Figure 1 (cartoon, rainbow, N blue to C red):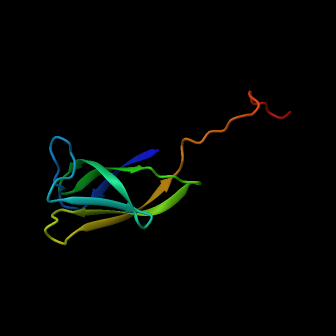
Figure 2 (cartoon, one colour):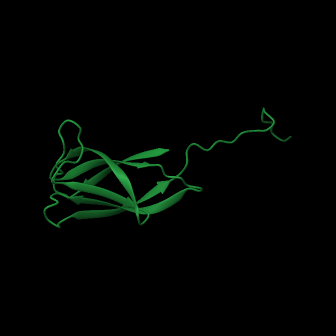
Figure 3 (spheres, rainbow, N blue to C red):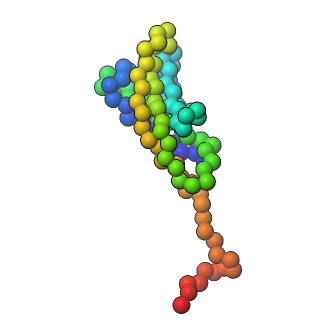
Length: 112
């Protein structure tokens, strides 16, 4: 499955975007990492100004056995020509919403 999350990030410089797709554009870079080594896909920047940015990310292809919470980091680099970047840590809870319970034989009957 795929989970989509919109991150509201305060106090970062405006992020350069492609005006037609809202994708992050050069010279900017935005990354979101979680669980130590995995990366989420940055889908688009809904808006970005001097005060706040809204960044839409996708956590696709995650397979989990049980609900879990992991630490994640969003990193905004306004200009890749410099090493200056802004980072914020946050927690993300993953769960599998596609799990179902079936009765065999059907239909289900409650005990009396």
